[in-house]
Length: 371
Image (cartoon, rainbow, N blue to C red; front, side):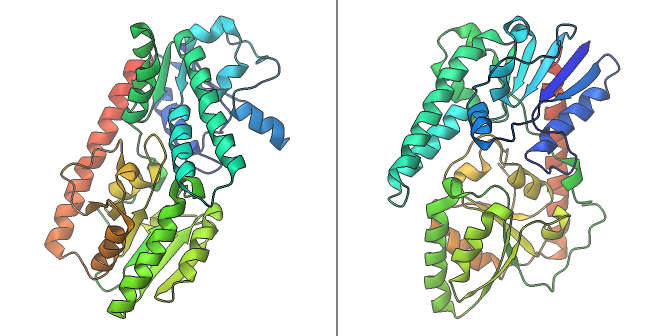
């Protein structure tokens, strides 16, 4: 089989420059198959930010000029590039969305409508965004071979508004792979028991995903820590996440460190020291940072939406909170909790099994889609 991968995000093992790790893992797995020849084509995003925004919405001037007719299948990543593809190759295309864009847009819109600090212009923009992608998905999903999402919730959302059963069957779920570059060696890891706990806020935490929760969390931590006369160590990572560090820095009971970028993700993934916090209000698909943290054996404090599409049932030290008061209380409680040697061994064994199951399902599902 001849397979073309067409993407605007350059595959990258380190997962830099956007969500490039996902397409890298898929590309490398497919290249290992003897019966598949893989060619990767990069569509460069426009340098004009207004044109780039229109492209993100699925508006393209003209069509893709390179011939793709010789390929048996075309893996397209991400979904909005469909607006750039010639109609004669649409039935060969397997779209790696990876999220249901209309669902994410609708969730953000619902959050914005409850947040008085969000401007009317942003609310209108978000409404138009989610409506545009409902139109886009309804138009293109019936024309392609398959439409892959990395969220079971995303799949259900899309299937619910597609009219024909044959179109619903085109929407399929792919288990998000573990990104190999981000995996710590759990079998050789040394677990400290003398380091103060750090609470990590990393990944895509723009205001539209966590906004009001960060404000509420800071307020609750301030009240609770004032009573306990204690301090917590907070680490915020990400160029777009500085606003979170600024809010936490106003709480005098928090010691806040901020990093625009950490070269080695494992540096904030040390068992018995780092607790990853994911106070998401909205989003879609599988949250890679959450998946990675769990696979690396870390304690997780999250909202329900932060762990959606990840099989967490039966896992220890993964805590789901209903509100930010509960979230703050859990952070304070975990700040004084340390694993014993016996518990550490159990945790590592548990997370190694978790890794094995995730990888196995990813391989089986991807191989079943590329035929």
